[in-house]
Length: 431
Image (cartoon, rainbow, N blue to C red; front, side, top):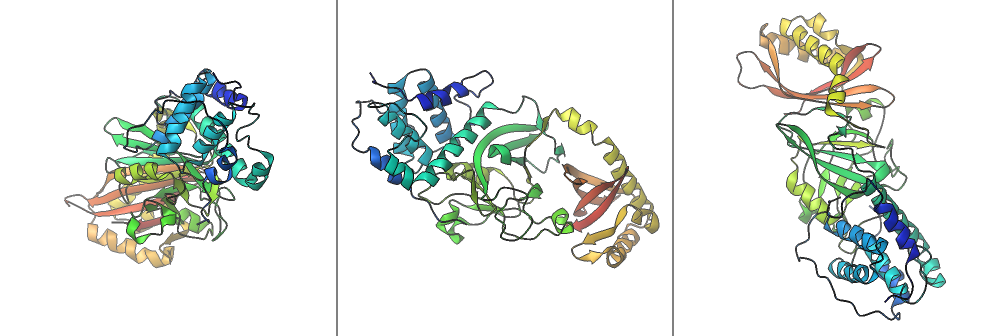
């Protein structure tokens, strides 16, 4: 029997098993850091260990599996089942030796056999001083993982940004920076359904990216633009990368700069990074990113990045969009009529289309009206997502098809609410 018990980990486990916590089976461009075992567990190498039976995992590495196993270890500790917790921790670090947080918990469980454990990562003073920055990051990682797994989205709710998603968008992603969490949704005939969620890291200096090199992660509605071949990437990016379209037209309208914002993985020697550890990208553990890469589609997958997601019933989100839907249909009717001035009334004075002002872009609109010859237009595969910060905006994607035609251009518009009116400040062809 273990002579002392890891009290700090006991408190962690108690938090996890309070009502409302997640079920144990539920999936819940900087220099590489050394593994936690190098700085932290080295000091514990001489500690005697109680003989344990190693609980081996299935050799296949699945997304979310390592985190679920770590949470199960916390639960076993909370149930005073120390031997089982130690056995599972040993198995976890065997299967994922680069999982620094798991190494830290395993080290605490080893230390708890001979002395009280006063805090998560309770290492000897000399080791704590040497690895103080890493200890602080690992403790923060533990806290945000637990918070996100305890504070689950209410059943049947969606992030408020998802108002309408075309069947062509088979998946959607939402990132909650406050919880260091990425949520993956599947879009079906019955609507969006949450299918998985993962721990992520964001910018070293937080969120609300504004300028090149500010080490912040942008906030807004984005789309995955490509899937980079991992063979073309450095090991730093792990198993791959999915760039997003930052800066989007709304970012550009507000003078935001920078580029190269990706969803990407971690180097081979690092399972995960601290909650705030990137140069602005969103970083996942490699098994989790592999699931994302193998699941989502380029160009049609929206990625919402929010400081904190607001989860609402789908009908609540739709009710808030009725006035916008009226404006969108009014614009469609105006364009169907072929009346240039009437159609132009839906655009802002500072409208921009890939660098063209409203005056410079007007001939393009006139040409489109002439080609349609007064035929009505239909909006096919319509999607719209709402983003609200200092302004209320809509990101709208659709196929514009003239009556009698079999196909048309795929367009994206950005609308802004000005008083009680919705106006278009960007429009462009994307396919």
